[in-house]
Image (cartoon, rainbow, N blue to C red; front, side, top):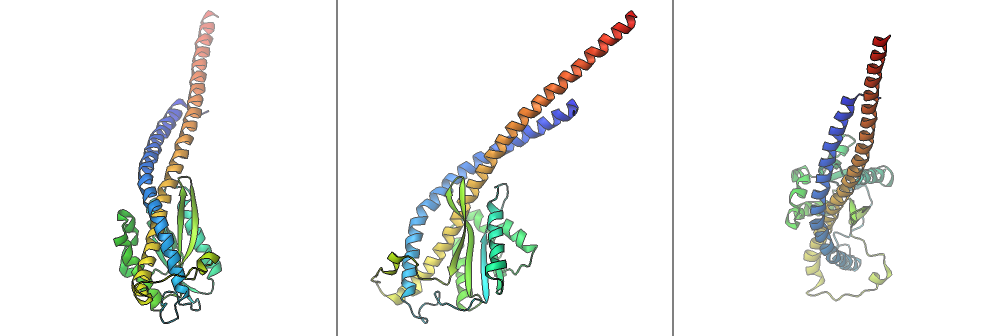
Length: 290
C-alpha cells in the first residue's frame, strides 16, 4: 500500500487537473454556442449554392466550365482541416487517418500534395512523406485565430488557380462535419472538379440564369467554391469545440471517480497507520508489565 504522503500528493495533483478540465469544458461550451450558430446559419445558404453550382456545371461545355473539367487523376491535392490545439478526443486523429488512408488506397498511383489547415494535421504529415502545397500562403493554421470569409477567400482562390492551371487534377477536403455537441462526422468531400449532382431531383431542375450563364461562370462559381471552403472550416471549428467540451466533461468525471478512490485508499492507509501505532503502544505497555 502506498504511503500517506504519496496518496496526498496524488489527491492534490488530480484535484488540480480536475479544476483545469472543468474550466476548459466551460470555455469550450461558451465558444461552441457561437460556432454552432455560425455554421447553422451558413449551412442552408451554402448547400443551396452548391446545388445551383452542380446544376450549372452539368450544362457547361469544356471551354466554359474550367472548374468542372474532368481530367485523368494524376496529381491530387488533399486539404486536411484539423485544429491548432489538442485535448479534443479523436477529433484530429479521425481526419488525419481518413486522409492518410485516401492517399494510400484511393489515390495510390497519383502524386499527392497536402494543404494542412490546422497545426495538428501539419505536425503529423510533416513527419511522413509530405509535399506541402502553396508555401507562399504562409501559415494557414492562423485562419482559426480570426475565422472570417475574407481571410478564407485567398486560400480558396489559390486552390482554384492551381486546379485551373493544371497543378492538380482533383482537390478533396477532409474535415469533421458538425452534427451536435457530442457527434462529429468525418467527411471526404470533393472540392474540385465540380461534379453534377447525383440526386435525381436536382438533375431535372431547369434554372433560368439571369443576367446570363457567362456572368455566373465568372462570378457565382468562384464565390460558391469559396463559400464551400469557408463552410468546411466553420464545420470543423464547431466540431472542435464540441469534441473538446465532451472530452473535458469525461475527463472531469474520471477525475471525480479517481479522487473518490484515492480518498478511500488514503483513509485505509491512515487507518492502517493508526492501528499499527496503537499496536506498538499496547505491545510496549505489555513489555513494561512483564
